[in-house]
Figure 1 (spheres, helix red, strand yellow):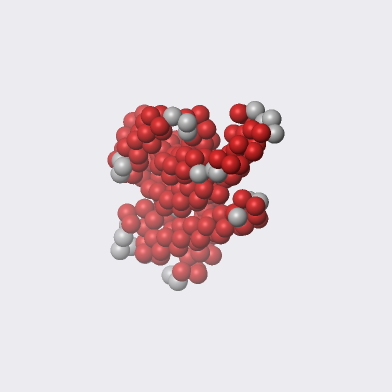
Figure 2 (tube, helix red, strand yellow):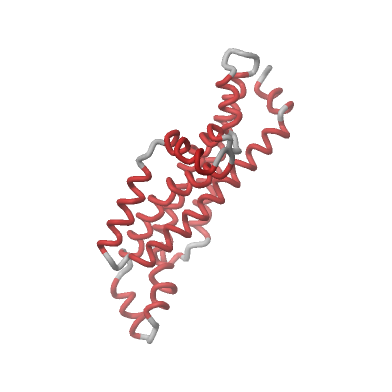
Length: 215
């Protein structure tokens, strides 16, 4: 069966897998961003707390993805649960590092000017420092999303949703009819999603981040 014929005949299942893959990545990135930015905002003034946070997330980041799923399955069972937790764990480190880098890179003269016009410390943090750190944080989110799209394929190992099911099912029956086609379709789908995600971040950076911040 040709690749095009396989796509047409399995259009419904493939569409479902793509949607599941996207929702899994979007959900995990949203949670990881809230966690990472929250930790960064709460602790960026303390070098000790920063080192502890980065070291902890860095240690979790070094756990191989298959081992991570193996650790989570006995606790959360099969399905989307362990996949979501694993992706959040892996996404937190790059976003957290960039949050710290962005918050600490803001020009002190800008902060002094904000305080000089009577802004409170919280207002300076939320209305000046955080927006100026936005482009750097966005880079961390971009890296985490690209990584998450790839790692999400392994969710099928834990019975999770997404294009990984297409890849794993093809590998499980390798040599049978359409097995290689299934793997190819799954891999192409992941690559296309990664390219689309990267394009979205380029658009966000170009149009939603103020020009003055880029300068």
